[in-house]
Image (cartoon, rainbow, N blue to C red):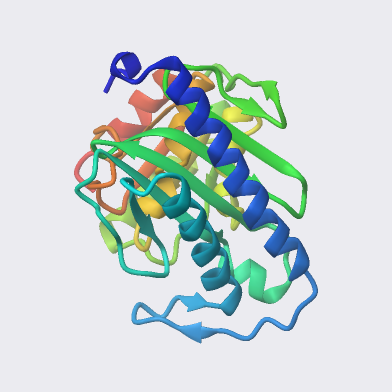
Length: 266
C-alpha cells in the first residue's frame, strides 16, 4: 500500500514514537542483562520469561496512552482491536533462547501496520547498541545512517542466514538445502540481527519457516525494503499481518527471483 494517504508528518511521528518504544524496551533489557533467566514453556514449547512479558506490557501501556484507537498484536498477550486501521506489532524479545542462555544476540521488534501492511519497522539490539529503522517509501537507517543492501553478483556469491532449520518440514528442508548448496555459505542462529545485516549489505539472503509469525517479520519489511531489498513469503507474496510462517529476504531483487524459483513447490 502506498503511503500517499498517510501524511509525511504522521509517518515521521509514528517513526519517532517507534524509536521511543525501542528506547523503553532497551532500557528494560539492559537492566536485566545479568539477571537469572528462569523461563516457562508455552503451548508450542517455545520459552517465555518474565522479562518478555514486562517489555510487552510496558510497550502496550505506552501505545494505549499515545494512540488509544490503535490495535496491538504482541507475542505474549492477546491481541487488541486488530480490526483497527493501525495495528502495532510487537516482539518483546526476538531470540528468547539466546536471552535465556546469556548470548547477547537478541532484540526487540516493533512495527506499525496500516490495513495489515507494515509501514514502520524498528529492529533494536540494545546490548550491542544497534538499531535499524524503516518507514515505507523512505530510506532505511542503521544507527542513524542511511544503508543499502548488497547487489550480490550471483547466487554462488551469496551469504545466507537461517535462524533455525529445525522446524522445517521434509519438503521445506529439501528446498533449503538446495539453496544452501547453491550459495557460498550459511550462518545460523542470529534471529532478527541477520535480517538487519541484509539491509546493511553484509548478508545477502535470509530464509526461515516453521514457528515464525507476524511479530517476527513485520518489523523487517520496511527496513529491508527501504534499503533496496525484497522480503516476501516463499510464494513471492508481500508479507502482512495475515501471512503464514515462511519468509525469505534478499538484498538483490534479481537474486530473490532465483531463490523463489528454488523454493517453488516446497
